[in-house]
Image 1 (tube, protein in one colour):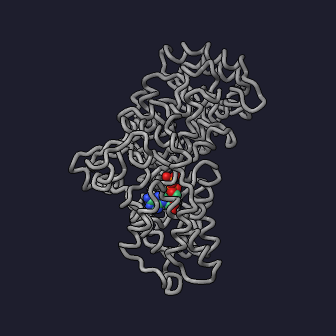
Image 2 (cartoon, helix red, strand yellow):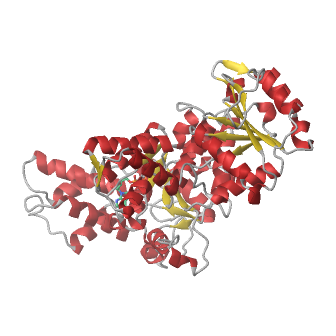
Image 3 (tube, rainbow, N blue to C red):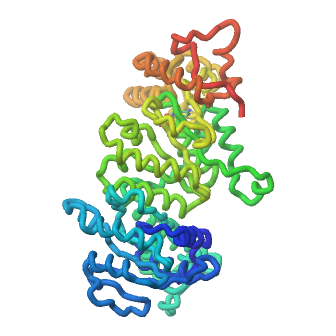
Length: 546
Ligand code: ADP
């Protein structure tokens, strides 16, 4: 096994050389993690002082590189003693030590924690170079050792590692019919990115069994399998949507900003020395197209879109939050370039501001996310959407986290026209239903005029209700149906006027209007000065053009 990313090897080597005493790797791929450590400490150019590798498990105690078991090292106390007394340049891998750090109903073993802290000087100042690496499928760190243990994010396998595993499988099954050339096999490996090596192997095996061979169709099976695996985490989901930028009515400023950043990870963008875009925060009035925009980005940028459910991470329903957050981020990195959509980011982060009493864990998980956003090199673009920005911690909004913060307000008249046009065109798609309606500028103008203060979702709903009316009366759609359903709608801007005005006040100092300046003419013209208190006459967000 080989093919580890040199940057990762270098990163681990740096920690070891800087004498970080305790390093923690959370992974399901124990064997691969051990291989990685062995590769790192045997490479003289990066590690300088080559080290031996000892592995410990509760069932066997310590084993050296040749697999020889060291007697009387099976208990954690004996294992720690062995480390303290060892006088070699060595790495000590402790597997599943998290069970002593307090999990489920098993309390922290303070004797073990104390012993680990006792030997700190042995690790830091011994004449020989010694480090301990915990390798566990779960991330559990005792409160008293937070400062001494460094978490190392061990990435999921890269394309080459997966390709090696695929080639290995094909060598073992030499009778298998492979109807793929070299590039086809590489594509297959690429499609399994985001999986562990074992999961990738399972996916390949399923593809082989299902089709009796490996061919182009296998790609679909692997993708399905990957979808299942990712969904099982409970917090991430692949979004496959056929929505495109043409499905978004208005929001021209936001669309232009996004379009300008398309392909910014390509090699041709390198010539311009532009930093990779980090992400965008889209806030605003509910039902105005924030999620729609996130979904349309996948097609706009032809990149895979992953949706992260922060609420579930914090709910505790899916196990340790921090571990889940890290796993989600490493999945997004493994399939990079990719888009990570954090929907309703405020819901997940409400604990950070201390309102639900769980600020310890929440702050840590949030911290993990912020640090990752700040430091990530992998091309993962974050789209965060938020309806209620009051709950957002200020750290998230600080310059440099997101490239831009957009505010999506109630659609303007011209935007409503466009939204009606989109939703009517989509549904009047046969000769019967639209025969009594001419979908022209005049009709759209009238509809837009009648729907001042409507959000996009209400415009869509008005079209749907009108269609129900026509269906009920067993006839094609009439303009009257639309007008009646509009009159019968009490828009959100009436029921939630105060909330919308508060959102705007917030946005005026922090965010940029998603609507283009020319679409705002009706609000900023001299004849109609905007009234701060009137939800229909005022607007939120600064008017910058992109
Ligand atoms: P939110 O801003 O709350 O995320 P959504 O994007 O989920 O709102 O909007 C709900 C639905 O309303 C969309 O799926 C879409 O059908 C319709 N809609 C809202 N805004 C627009 C818009 N600007 N253009 C077209 N459709 C829209």
